[in-house]
Length: 618
Image (tube, rainbow, N blue to C red; front, side, top):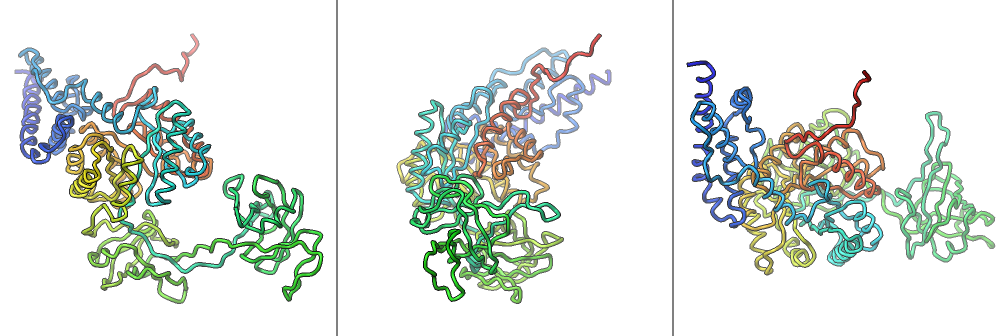
């Protein structure tokens, strides 16, 4: 017997052993697959099949199969049984036993992609003609009143508008949804509405407010020369108008005084340091003026502003005849923060009254979720503000936890109020659905095409959501599971099979919290594994968090985020967060996804003709 024949015999036995594992897995997972909706039954079985073969290290088998020109099983996610049977039949044929792949498989090779496309279309709406990935955009609060903004986003390529129920209220949500429907109808293209339930709020408590002062600061060279004047927005305190450009500091003043001003006027004031400063009304715009100054100026609530040609207020504060002056209205308080370094002890408290910011006192800050104090243990990790700051619990009391900071290991980091807290090692006995979520669900079922379940960790969370939807008489609303905790990722097959009891379901990879919970070094691995598992279940994936974030916030993308956006094409939907330049980000993402769709589908490289290189001259 030749070496090749012996190797083929071994390969036959190993592939057939994998086929045997599929049957065992079906029996093991039957309590999870039996309740699945009839339309999802074959997909659930294929998911179990994929789980079964991924319990084995297949790398050596893959290499040996490839040496005979056979499928290496590397693209079998959507049709595991069919792939194994065809490989087994091919080996048998090479051994002289003829071609007989069998008559019936759970999901055939050409059926997996069709099932995924069907499920994605039912949940996320029709995709653009040139690709499979839709674009989802988180709507800012302005979308409730600015339909032109919503139309711009729809025209740029938004196919799903996301409303975050952690912000605004039902009145604003209804206005946003109405604007989306109107803009989509005007554009003649689909745009669905997704609504995120807020979930339990695990955030830092408030800090004491700082002074109500703003700073206008010009841009200078390293030698201190001004290259761009500081710019602000002077508008009515009674009815403030939206600034004509992003990033302008708003200075509210008396409306009647403002009405007497004209472009080119000069204003005189003494800033909060007592320095004399001048502001130029550089440009008129609806509702106010853009003001400029070439000197750093600190303006506070109550700062007196005098139109040039009048006289400044005397030190006694009494006005002089002939002046045309006003006071700056209420300004936002300067946001305070705690500055922390490795080795510092931060006290996390159940008390959420504003904590002092005092360098002479040990730093402390509140936590909005009381259950943390009842369940955290010494040695467990805690992270703050998307992982920018972190440490280990070193002391536990009934109303406080002491955390020794160890991240970042060098330098200092700022901790502000209302920043997220992650406790990946702590088992919190809380539901993903809060009382607020339950109240919001009534509005969600009225407005949304699908709902996104935040903080899901176990199948019971999914079942409770389904029960609440049933109580509201809703059986059609789509459901997306946001995978943002370590527990959710570890139970992903169970969560997906539970969700598949209902039609129109999908998964979001919430990469921000997931990276904090599991470690940034594992993020790339986890998002790949989630994509594979969802493809096996024929469930659509939403790729979320920090996609083109720098572009949306500053107008200029980083090179790394362009590559990240290109990788996102393998998902069925890509989510952008709001920002001043969000429309530019939508246009850029639309272009990237269209280009990449011709090169890649899931893990398959698509060998379209390339026009990048010309033949060398003869």
